Length: 191
Image (tube, rainbow, N blue to C red):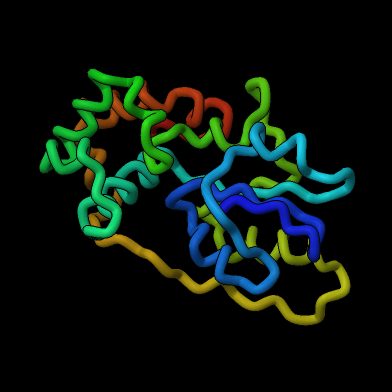
């Protein structure tokens, strides 16, 4: 969950479905919501390091759907009304204003950009999770002698996103919905 951590002089921007729950469980992170950087920026003291992790938009949306359907404590009416991933994506594509109604579907750029540009000091990638986690740790704690690997928690069950997105229509709808994420965060639409 997003947090300005005064003890360790950093600000964590929690983008949903990017291993944020595992991160917030670390004693030096913490958290309390999915607030975007733009909302927290006025309260971040000078010199604090801002950071976030992002994820391939295809993988993130599939993980979000799986999480929202597999965890009854997080029910979302939109998901319950569309019992297949394809139908739900098609519904989102037909109703793009719904993307911003839930943190799990909100484009990642909404969390990490200010005025259309990436504005965090460190932007890690889920695809390089352990390596970027170690780089972040060294940036925040340059004198530390040990870096603990980040455990995986809150994983949802689903097929590999590459298999699910073999369907070209599905891929095209997600490319259209998350064009800003693909472009700004430099994710390939074909990989």
